[in-house]
Figure 1 (cartoon, one colour):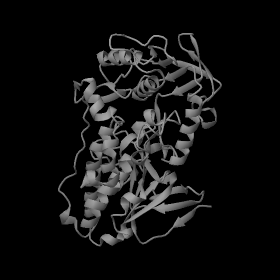
Figure 2 (tube, helix red, strand yellow):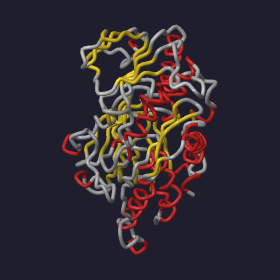
Figure 3 (cartoon, one colour):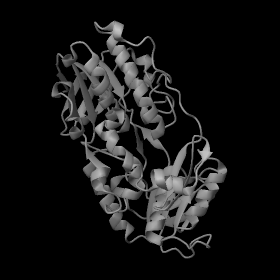
Figure 4 (tube, one colour):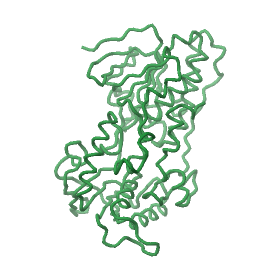
Length: 416
């Protein structure tokens, strides 16, 4: 039987402890709560299935070895990032949302230790993100669980003689590039491909070229760079089935050898199979009428409110359908969402006159933007519609997969 938590506080509940959730919490605690009348009566409650936040884009490199990336920057304690704020205004709960009742303004959660409770929200932010198909490529539970999965993968990797990766998007290409360089090295300057790689790696891609968010010319360039680290790309082919079932998808079948049947009637065998295509929005707790056909929360694309859920409900990031899932879109949404929450809170307080006259409006930047490292030294990509050279991809992302940026995000300094 779920317990109900009674509190006199006006709780602003934020579901999700990654880029969106942590940043919105900082924004509210810095720029909204202090400006509200009787601000001690407001409490930001951040709920996350992990006590640590991580730089998720770094998974393709980080899963290979702890020595490649600094662990103290990769995994960061969430609660410590909020020590700077009054304890009366912030609370962290290690748990997961299980049910949302937007008509009663309550959300049910299951704490990490297994107890259930129901929280009444004054305002609610859904920033639960999405889960990758491969348990290696994201923080779907506690950080210790991900580390354990990586440890199992590394043991199997040392014995692997062949690897197949399903998916030609950024996750698949980055994973192939990192593994290829780590296991096989890189072909010489004048060689178009690495002959006789130690561990052949195959990428299965359903599109005409890999990296379909980028122009085909860049996708072809990525194929060339992958070939130099022992990776072969098969285009216009889908994975039809994998035997045994669930290989690469579940923890107990994470490192099993597999037979992969393709839509071309070809069959591949692999010591390791990594499904790196698609994600599933973490929205199973959200009522069906609030979800779009792709499982993401139906969100007002300009205000980032969940209009169908009633007042004071918002969504952003990969759990929301307001924009294409991408970190640069999340970072653009954060100040917009925080400003509109502040406006709503002021309008519902005795300080209505301090509210801005209009909402802040979010507009997605739809220009071609995606940076894809291929190993530790090369990469392809475009920014704001312009193709960028390999060294720019390395400088901005490829050096450490954004770790140079996350310290300011997690600490909130990004939003000062």
